[in-house]
Image (cartoon, rainbow, N blue to C red):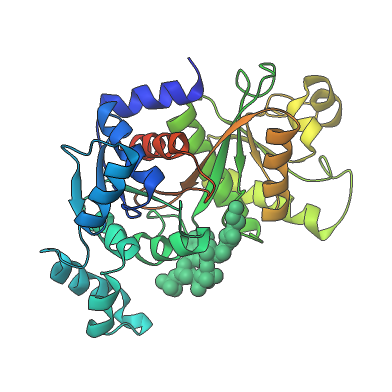
Length: 330
Ligand SMILES: CC(C)(COP(=O)(O)OP(=O)(O)OC[C@H]1O[C@@H](n2cnc3c(N)ncnc32)[C@H](O)[C@@H]1OP(=O)(O)O)[C@@H](O)C(=O)NCCC(=O)NCCS
């Protein structure tokens, strides 16, 4: 079974309600039909019902049994606006602006998740990453005990000798441009959790990456990864985690043994933590384009799951992201 087949099977085992704010977007409408048909989740589409129905007719999508909610004309709008105002009044939100903002499907969907009317949210076929992330960060916020939301890429590599039978988790590749040592430590702990929940990796082995292995080079950038390793050990003493180390020392057993002898992680890492967003984003694309890996992106560390799509996403990408979100919500 491939990773995504396993994730789909998990999603079907405990069906969650997932809201899709871009409810009149053609790929999203088609995806909702397939999600419902395969019982991967209970999809909820947001948008004007006539507009959604028109798109469905054009797509040949059968939306029977799928709830469509119009944020501009909903019985819940007043409740959501009042809750949004309470949450954001200290940041300058007025009651009037809250009433207007919940008409925006993205904010309406986030409020559904916040107040428990949906278990998770998937968006981004039309909106940019920032448009989707900002309301999630402002309203859903990080999990208790976490100060930072980040992302992981689940990389399924053709070379099964790598990581966990070819599976590697890369973080952070989407959210935090320049995490400091404390934030990098939190990203490492979240990524280990993602490896367990979504990849079924029972023993995450986390490597904090650098251009140096165990002090082979001296630089402030190296010191940050050493400090991040120390903090992560303090925060999660039971986690198998080590750093700083180079990419090859993390993945190749002989190189790990020679550069970081005695490390519980070197040469057999299955979770890789990059020092910043440039390295992480470039790293996952190299693995995908040159290494031929399939990759699946998720946000981690949010109090409730919300996930972003690429604007170039396919119907299948939306279906898969909904399945991953449903599993995170379980
Ligand atoms: C995540 C991101 C959208 C935040 O946007 P921003 O406009 O800088 O947001 P702000 O700094 O004003 O923060 C907005 C809120 O989110 C919170 N926040 C920001 N980043 C956060 C994080 N990583 N974790 C938790 N909360 C975060 C802030 O504390 C703030 O909360 P508050 O309003 O309650 O005080 C921004 O960091 C970003 O654009 N990251 C890169 C995304 C990207 O383009 N990736 C590449 C795509 S492949």
